[in-house]
Length: 254
Image 1 (tube, rainbow, N blue to C red):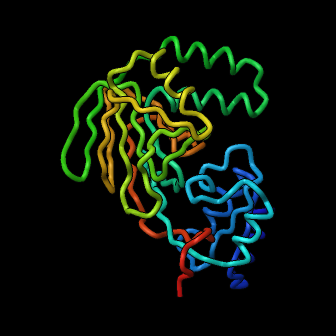
Image 2 (spheres, rainbow, N blue to C red):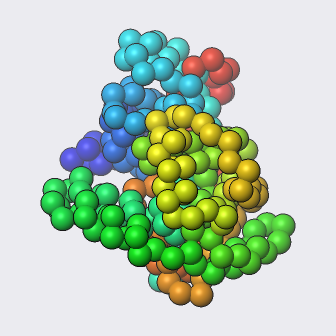
Image 3 (spheres, rainbow, N blue to C red):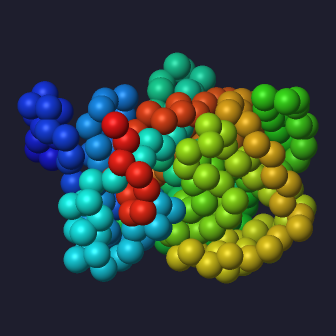
């Protein structure tokens, strides 16, 4: 029903479509990509990664004032392509490896599967680093890694600051390769950066690229935001300026 309402608003040439919760923001954004309609965010969800990255405060009255001012900024989105040719648009990050495997089970917990917590632990215990070939704009990285992320913005998942320097409007991903961690070091690291916290980790390699293709020696789990992509190979590409969003403190576009 919400998706139909957004499509009707676009057809009726409504200038602004506002959304509140985490899932609703992503749903509305996906319908507005590539249009000249703007997304407004009233951050009423639990995490609100995109609102945090855009500097939209959690106070609803303040966020409403931002909507009233109507300052619009064009931001990038990502597009994932699976081996089967399926295309998925995303706002936050694409990922391959341990985090994708864990989030797959965590999502089942949110859907009410009581056994998913134990399976999440089992996945973490059994997961082994995978041998990867990572093709970037400027070259190829061949490595064994626990996980790789292609971040459009700084935050992913439970507000984890996976790519603190990533920007939503620069046309490139911050590609982060986690390859010198033990499993438990990586899990502790992910817990330490949850909900917007930051932690400097020198053993993470960072690259910047508008496209990234990941092939692996054995199939590894892949995700784009909360969407399960199955397994590798997978390609992530940026679509610069594809989504218009109402933001604080920026000149309005004409």
